[in-house]
Image 1 (spheres, rainbow, N blue to C red):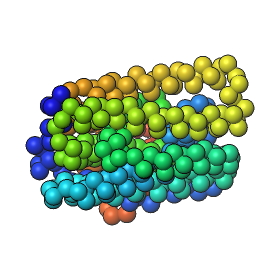
Image 2: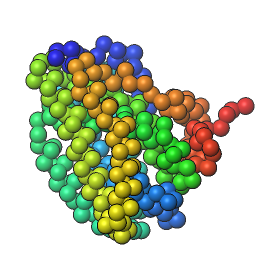
Image 3: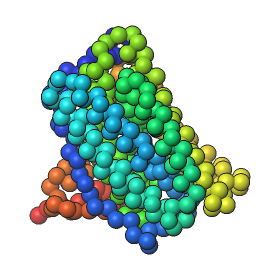
Image 4: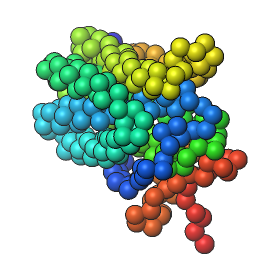
Amino acid sequence: MNEIETAPDLLASDPVPQPRKIPFEFPEDLDPQWIPGEPELVAMLNGASLTMPYLEPFLIRTMRAAVERLDDGDIKEQGRAFNTQEQHHFQAHRRFNALLKRKRYPELAAVEEQMKASYAKLSRRSLRTRMAYTAGFESMTLGVTKWLIEERIKLFAGADPRAVSFVLWHMVEETEHKRVAYDVYCALFKPTFINGLARMLGVFHGSFDVMRFAMRGYKVILKKEGRWGRVRSRLRLAQWMWAFVSYVFPFLFRAALPGHNPRRERDPQWVTDWLGGYARAEPGVVPLVDTLHPEMPVPFPVRS
């Protein structure tokens, strides 16, 4: 099992994640049901968004505490860039969630209180447990990214481009820092059986803990929409959940195996194209995906 936690040798050659504070707007005309005809899918995605302003500050605090204990300047820089990206993410989700509560679902505030208490309790656990949770959750996001981006046409055709673009931006940046939490864990907690086991358990702890709160959120939403008790709606929800699970769970199991390294997970080409397009774009651009385009390409014009 020692192989699992060998500190990565490739970190020095890895690019530092680039924080992008994109000014996405969520005005009052944005419908909380932002994917026409797919209320169950929207509920799932809105429920996931609800977790971010509580999860990601916890990840930031954990990463900050971890890098303060490290001497390696490269890893410190990676960890700080990770934190800046996560800060931009949860701030955008907080604005989006405020719209959801204001326009249709004030009941979501009760779920937020539960998350607030849960992460306060989790913050009192050991740094090893918290970093294992952090690295574990980041394993799940690789599968989520693959699902949302590779299936974007099926999922988002005709949806509100403001919400879709915001979601996909978040997923793109998750791939950019996919290795950082793993690297920091390996650098801080040296190769032992116990540290390896803790990291593997963290894959499931971090992933399932976030999923349970997202599920609470989408249950509230579907109840408010009058759909939770309908058989047809529950079957449709089960179909979307299976689509999600079939993409995500292989990533979780690979992440828990000896020898795991997130660098081996190949990014979708769309992600690579998005990152390259943004790097060439004018400063301050808001990359809005054309959800009516049959291929839903990256939202950057080709420069002449």
